[in-house]
Length: 411
Image (cartoon, rainbow, N blue to C red):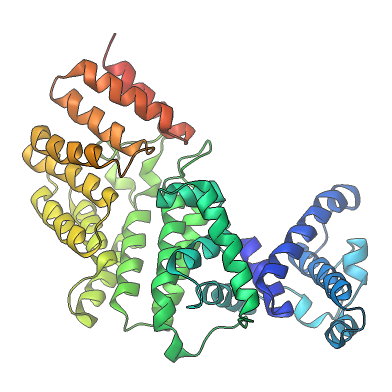
């Protein structure tokens, strides 16, 4: 998320989101060369901002050598610290790292990238890339679309913002509502990637997840009368509460049934439940995030998996499926049905998803189907499904868990 803050600071400086992202990358590339040679500067973030600004000035110069904007920007720039990597200059005004102001920049970055001039899909893809720092592959997996589609959306979005001369700023409060849904989607998907990484060697990306929680708290403070904001905050708090027990000492995933619930973060659970209560008070029923939070609450208050109110979880998923239908929601409902009514009832729901091909390419569907078939004693079919899940899974830790289950079926 540091990169988002730097891009945000540069976007505020240049007024050009695409240029800000480009010069931030150039500054980072220069740091990779300079810092190992000259040492890390006293103020790394300020150094990157300064270099980014210099690169922005170069870009302005290329665009128009005598541009009045370039003259004004260059006049204010302190060249010393950026050029040498030495200790931070004594008085550089806003070149110094200002956490409060940078936080505003991140928020401004999110609202700018979620501008209504963009399609909802483009808003979320661009914001996840620029603010969340997710790769195109990670975004593609989150939305179950090809990577090329995500890349095209991001490219078009940048060009559209530039062509429309969208200002880099937090919009007035009356304009928040039309962008808030996209902003919440970004926070949600960022957290999801942090709580279950779609690729790499680690199951969790705590920095990413906790930054999403922080953003949700900021939004809840800014708009305390929006039930979906409170619902999202509740969901993230309740889900993050399980992080201490979700992996073992070696980083291997620990299934819900095997987690030591004494290690769950009780303060986070209290915060999540309080936010959920508040969401219920200010809204006319829970929205999609609030329903997911209510499901998370069922797990949070249950002493064991067996003692979980699975019938209520099924009902909540049914409500969620009507409000915000998606194949992932249906798959999760099937898992809940398997716990409440048995694997046979759940398998019928999963087979409908197989027929629709909506989750083709995702390891989740064969993983769940393999589990259900194993519980039904259909071992050979379960082996086929779990083998398929292993092939599709992009996360090393999750793949190892699937391989363990596969070995558990015997030869």
